[in-house]
Image (cartoon, rainbow, N blue to C red; front, side, top):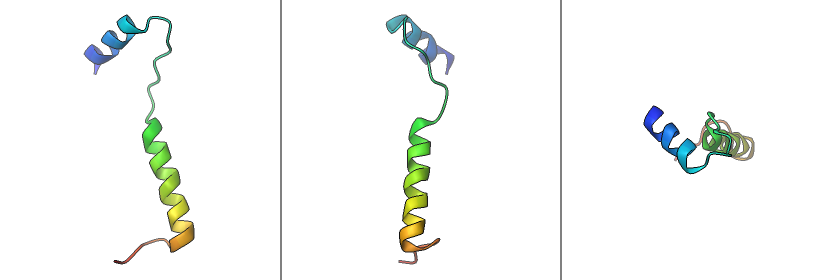
Length: 44
């Protein structure tokens, strides 16, 4: 999304723009932890 990235650069000129999926990595970590605790596939 170039328009959003440009706006963020305007609002925060000294900040570094991170181009990764930070929340996705948190979700993956939680999923791996749940798989260790409850098994690889939870059947409801």
